[in-house]
Image (cartoon, rainbow, N blue to C red; front, side, top):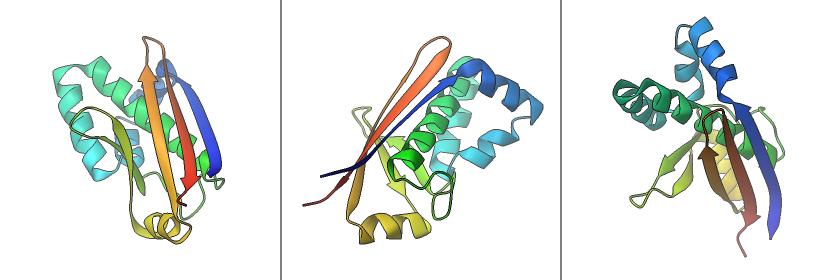
Length: 131
């Protein structure tokens, strides 16, 4: 059963300006520990691809927060959900702390898809309840 659907669209340039204004600290605020390590590695290889990664993760968190109907309110925090990739590259969500407990208690699961282009990124999340 579908519980909620969330969508987010972000202009990459908006994040670039925020990243520059904060001296890069925005990445540490938004990304969970595993995401942050991937971000640093990608940014080191190619700055633009690193920023695109940051943008897709931001969009996925925004879409997820809409899909669960909480917005950015506890137990939803920037770092309590991470968008990681399985070995094939498919993105999946990993929860921690109180958010993981909420997802478990409500028997919710979420699917995520992300995409990026030159100027924009998009994320869609579908939240379902296990049967």
